[in-house]
Image (cartoon, rainbow over the protein chains, first blue to last red):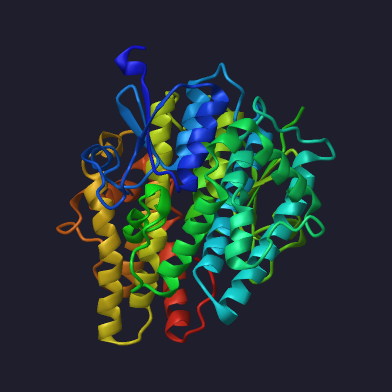
Length: 250
Length: 229
């Protein structure tokens, strides 16, 4: 492949934001080189490619860098038109998908992180907010799908599906660490079946870190927020997690 | 089929103004409905049940909410006079910088409001400092960007008109936040929204806007500020 056409992704194994981009690249069948970043010792290249935020993910294509996971996903969809589409064709359907993707990012993700980083009454409150938001999303999905079955597989996965499973793909780890099951199948049947379908997709499964590693990530994030003076965590299998200690949400 | 386009908004909101600019640039006829955010209409609540906020665009009965989502919808539905670049990379850059500007604005606005409250000189100074910290980030990032030359009114420029709301605030308060010597590139850009005939349409009429801020300032001072921004 010519140097200009090469695709590189600067990422970090524990980052759900990076996961989104990897899923999209794999769905589209785009070969890429993954550059694993140590977020304590960020590479010169990363700082050069993302001088504004100095964060991952960063996609490099044709020597040019694109940052912010949602911006990257839209770029991927517009550049590689041959693979499965990440967004519908119709402008109104696209608007609805974008609306709910923004909702997952701003309203859900932020509040789930709040649950991770709090305890006691503050955590109870945050959990309540997450359930309220999930309620809204469940209703929104009914409108979005309009009675049709939303089919998800390796050929048929869009940005909203990707955003959702990048947040709740780790639901088992979340349940273990936080003691709360967010996507309760009784309360949120649509969301629950949707999440199950998304996480079953081969590409998503292959990219998912092990349950143990995810538990470790959530425990770490929680510990960092609640006991900031705690020592860095060194994990078996030589996984270098101490890089998480000095990163702010990757 | 006859097009029916409605925009639910608030005339002082920069996010609603953006949508109007986009529609005008495309030559799309629309009906504008002014919303009282303390007394939201049933129509608004029906069209945006999730956030109950403006702007909401309704196109042939179909509602779209969230200003970036609406902007993209407008560009994709009425394809002439594109607001976003056509090239995917340039488009990605436009989306990135528009989001950066929005994020920085929300980060600095509490500082501006703090300075607007008459909590005392110290609090005012603190507010200004906080706001300027984020303006610094904007100035540093934007001054080298060629698209920010403001030659043509595009997606990023329309988003950047948000900064005028700082200019109005400081005029009303009689303080200096976004100054020419500290922020030359930003100042140059904000001047365009005051002077240039095309860029001007991104901002509501100046005198009524100043009057509105003056009234809000009085309400802020009395800690009765409505949630207008």
